[in-house]
Length: 252
Image (tube, rainbow, N blue to C red; front, side, top):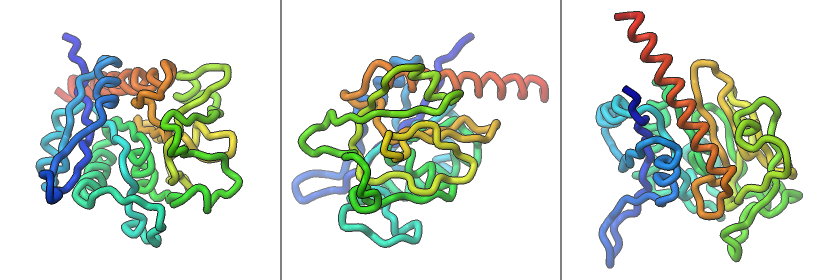
């Protein structure tokens, strides 16, 4: 029997304020894209105990690391830039533990926005903290007056991104001020903005289906082609599951 894959989504977190309680949440676009691509989304709130995270991951087939506020650069040995809007510590603690365990298992993973940046930082890469200062010749990658701001995308032949987009002009949404600087060992850049800013990385390890996009294919500003990235992810998750099922049958 064919079962739809269970895909984890890490929820964001906001602490309590004087006029509202603490709460976790996730943008609807993430789970809607998973559903449309043939998966079943499972929203996971920020957990604190490693064994609990292991228990959840035992039940999942893949994970999507969602976007959000910025990673705190001080946790990776860098100074805090004034432009950084750090995500809540409870979420970042969870996200970093989650990334460790996903990588340990070689679970299929797709990082979006800050999720891609976490994937790169976990692997030993680092980040530009503010594109306008670090890359002054770059085009704008964020427009506060235009939530649908877009720019071009150049993809690497033979990559997952080429399967998604094929030939022709490609434009994707852009809403970030941080970006990848040094790429983590074991990952390849497979798409860039024409100004050179890294927009996609993919794992080069044959035993790990892992990639990330700086742009947001789950957002309302995404195109029909962007949404196909989720279909590629689900296909990769199913292929990974088939291989593991066959290995378990051989061992049994």
